[in-house]
Length: 114
Image 1: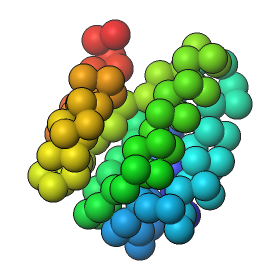
Image 2: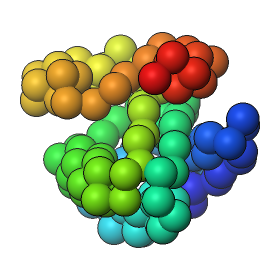
Image 3: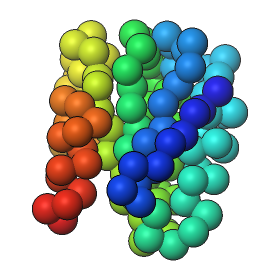
Image 4: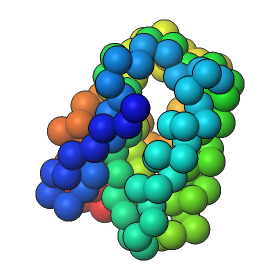
């Protein structure tokens, strides 16, 4: 479900053939993303390219991952959020909680500057 690749010691996690992050897939996605923070100081980019819809359980995944990352001194950023999903982030006031960037490259550059 979650595919990862390493770029400059940063893991880029993306979703294959998963246009909806909803209750049907949320638990599995959450466990896969949380496992990326098994090592302390992990840096992860969650690439939402291709994800057209996220429900409340999907947003819960990101909140759980944020907690696990913080507990392990890790950081993650989100990118490639489609307009409709970004509207939901804003509606839920989560655009202020998560570090969201337009592209993977922008995320990578922001890690260089932090």
